[in-house]
Length: 311
Image 1 (cartoon, rainbow, N blue to C red):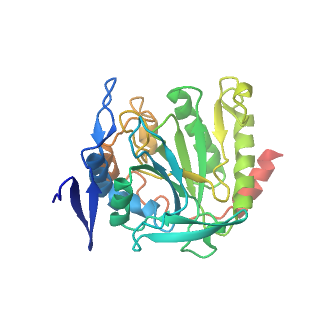
Image 2 (spheres, rainbow, N blue to C red):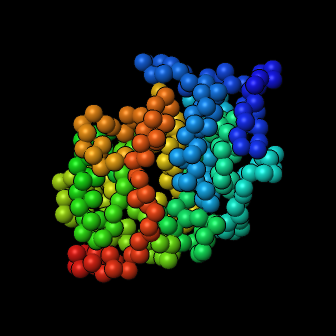
Image 3 (cartoon, one colour):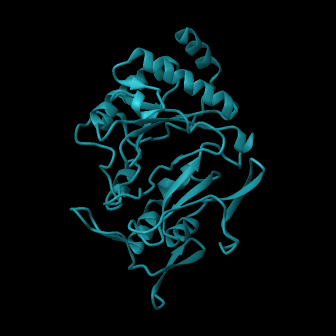
């Protein structure tokens, strides 16, 4: 339903107006598809049943492009006063004070964020609605960041890290970032604080790089990586974020961060930007993670095993 230069979209008990739905956010250049704000809203409405379980209870950092890819980017943490009162908020501690983040608990919120030209949702690795609160993550994320667009190196690194995580009794699931690499996600039981999780992730990365020195590096400085894939564990810290599953990325063609099966990681036809706003919902409907994150793991035993490997 349209009201002038707006379109009303029903979401559960609420109706959200998408202002200027024909506004182009992703220009169609160089063979990339053109997508409007209305297209973005339609995508997020369709993918909501699959995306919301990965968002509920988590503070968000919003990546907004009010004038599309050619305009200015805003990385928004604090929730503006004019946001509707029915949108969930979470006030968390920061150095010298607090910040109040948006929490996306329902489809209406997702649509409202699309109307705000929020292309990408970056989520915390902890939840504010669980025991332990924002200080205790229930996700560990390993970011496989290749030099350039070398996705075959990403594929190999993912397989090697899966082998190490399996040794430690920590099953992981893969996800394209919609940019260049993959994230490997491990479900935790929420009993460890961020300092413990980050220390474990750091030691894990060191062991992986020592096992595969020609492929992996933990060197944060680009000039020290020597063409190797950077294993980034810095997201595993308080107030850090990782791109949420099924988020659209602010790149030409509107690629999407998409959960994969391990069989798809092995597929040479798949890369980090394989799925876009046009077809990511089809991938979501296949349920690639199929309950793999339903049981959070303790790091107690894996930490002992890793310490033995770390020497």
